[in-house]
Structure formats: C-alpha cells, structure tokens
Amino acid sequence: MPVLIKAYNDTKPKKPLPRARLHDLRHLHATTLLLAGVPVHVVAARLGHSDPAITLRVYAHVISEQMASAADVFANAIKAA
Image (cartoon, helix red, strand yellow):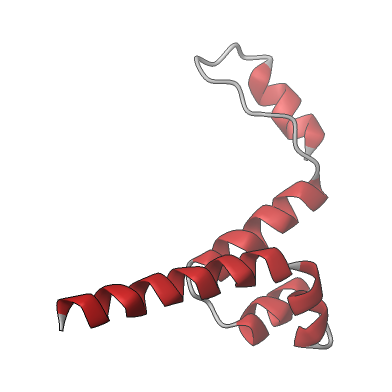
C-alpha cells in the first residue's frame, strides 16, 4: 500500500494522500464500520477475528463513543417528549 500512495503522490496531486500502511487502512475500515453502526460480530468477521471479543477489546474506544452517542439520542428524545 505505501508504494501505491507514493506513486499517487509522485503525480503531484492537489491533495496528496497521507502516508498509510495496510494495517492503518485496516483500522480505518473497522473504525468506520463500527461508527456507522455495523454490528461488532459483522466487523469481526470482516477482519478475520475468530471471536468478536477480540474486536471489542481492540476497538473499545469506538464502542464507547457509540454508547455516548446513544445516550445523547435518548436524552434528546426524552426532552422532545
């Protein structure tokens, strides 16, 4: 992946791509899916994790953000009622 990014950046685009390893893109993919509400077991399967608990441990910070967001949604629904 770094070779592709470097090749793209060597073309002098207006906005060069940031340096990223394949592993960085894997994390980006998983984080994006979790923030979009994709169930953890689905993300775990896409990452090749044999147990969703692995995904939960690695991406606990993302899950925590979703829980806080869910609390905000609930609080706003209560205020509106």
